[in-house]
Image 1 (cartoon, rainbow, N blue to C red):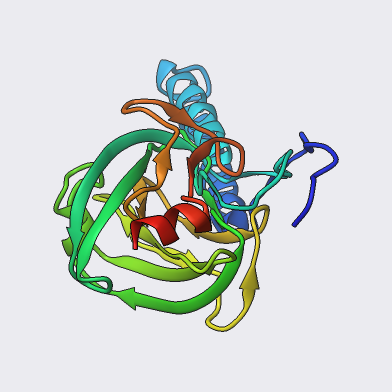
Image 2: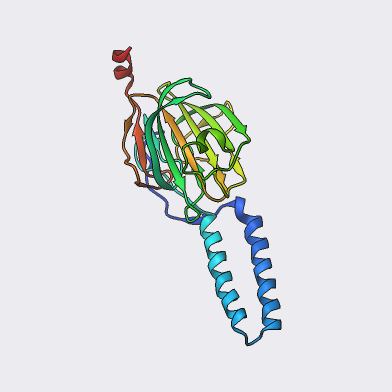
Length: 238
């Protein structure tokens, strides 16, 4: 992709939240007007009014959609696909697609994180597959295999296959994936959106240099997750 000239700091609201925010605002306004009519001087009205502001501000925060441009070279780079915290860094057996050992890095998104997802690597989308499932708590290990999820396979520019998995959580009930099979994809582009608590898993080739630690906070499209092994190193291993 070449060098990014600068990082944009603008904040906007994600279009996935338009209906929720509009109807939520109307519902809270109606509720507070009703309570004000019934209890014009009552403590109940003031309590509900304050709680309404807190709840609505929390929802607005959830649907923030920062405009971010990665600043630097992207060749061989894996960038965080989501805001959150690292909850898994381990070598695992990936049995749904690769059927071999992979390095798994998982980011858990709480209710207070931005839930927009970004493309983590420059390349081409080879597969997009949605699977229904359970709604275990997103930070549990079995969530990656049993929860509702969307799996995206990307072949990076160096030929390596990277698997990205959007995983629903105990509260999340909708996963939106924008990536489409056959299209080229780049860091800085949106991958999708997950409503409410959830996680994003990355399955990377063995030999990938991991640049994050357990518990580390990540910023989508900014935090460097890993560097893919250069082509000459792969040839030597073979």
